[in-house]
Image (tube, rainbow, N blue to C red; front, side):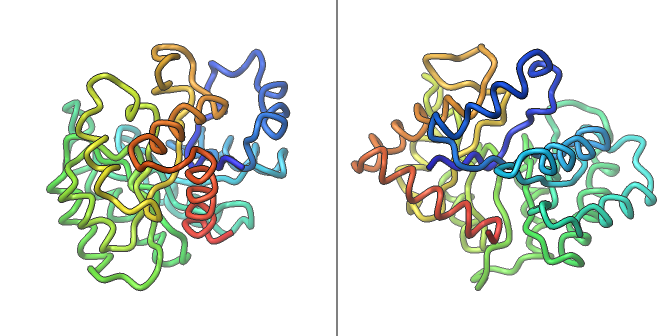
Length: 257
């Protein structure tokens, strides 16, 4: 079944139909979902959703755009939540230079601190990196050496070159592939998917964001992942079911399930 490795069902856009949507997942071929924390509030809600639904797991972390007012006690709280048996990763964490705030120095500080928490708890990480390829890699290289012998995490919504993709894979990371692959301007990601082995790819929605064609600009959900799987199958020259099977296996290895 399809494994959605990255979603945000605690978002307010699901307030009117969250439960009915989530309980429809299994009958529509969705096996598991990881609800991703991206701040103090959404992290708390991610753990709550994972407690309420057996097929949902959670990650805990502070998105770089939410780091402006973070304190060390928040980090200790994140670390305590990481001990929950339904928590499978630290994230999403990283760097986002698309906007000027918070400052790059603040983002780096809390990115590094959360990478330390991941090391301390033994959990994989979910990496967010936007317009910050060099700084993200330089920081991660201090934590994850090349020729990694184990899975260390996933680069969410991968948006860089095939060359950078290969560096991350060598460090023990998967690449999160979502709706952008189906966009008309998704040529760079198509090149990445064509060159990266299938056993290093996982499916993700980033719901409610980044809905694939033909639903672009609509609210996204895990039900749309068949469009992404179909596009990967087309690129790889295999069946959609093979893509679903491979990426589900990859997701379970990623999150150690």
